[in-house]
Length: 317
Image (cartoon, rainbow, N blue to C red; front, side, top):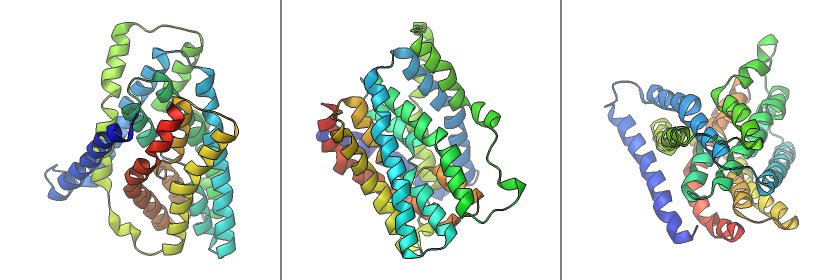
């Protein structure tokens, strides 16, 4: 992966967002843009992303380098949670704002954006995409629905039984989670999938990037960026600068390198997770701040990825 080779990919992804914005604003879809974006997102979550996950898990065995990729990203996530707490506490922000800053600045969009971008940047490296899937499973699924939702409930204003976290069964039955539950044991057992099945999974999974960025364009609403300047800027600094920097420092401290480690830093540089904002909103933290963090970090993510590309290239080797 070179800086020059990265440019067409980034421009292509940006073009898809622009197309989504234009199509959504012209009203040619026949339905509201938010509704269309929701349909595309549901298709990604329930169909194309699980197919992509199964494809990368059944195509090649996991390596120790893939397992090590969890270390920098997880260390960065936990440190960013602490940084969000320190900054918001020193600033004296309200509890809902503090909860929003912590959750939205720490948890990254490793699934909707991280996995497709990794696939686009490392098309010939199955271990890189495996690292992206593993990081998403542990950091964004397991930790968000345990540590993340606990923090949102602690700082939010929601009360009563309705504030209970989602049931374990509901989480396990999500298609993306089922893909990991099925694919990971088969990978570890060395089961080889039939070529026809791999071809089908690859074909379906390859549509993920297009659908994700079209949906982002349809949903893009910059009006949410108004107000909350200080918490927003602090969250962006943690999310887009501190998070990948901490992942890089952890990788360097442990002398880790290779494509999976580059993906660990890449995943840590992703914008705020949409599901993290949904959790913050559900628990009655600051919903407008959560939306502002998601939208602004999304708008800045591609330029930031361009700036980080030389580091990622050096790590990948």
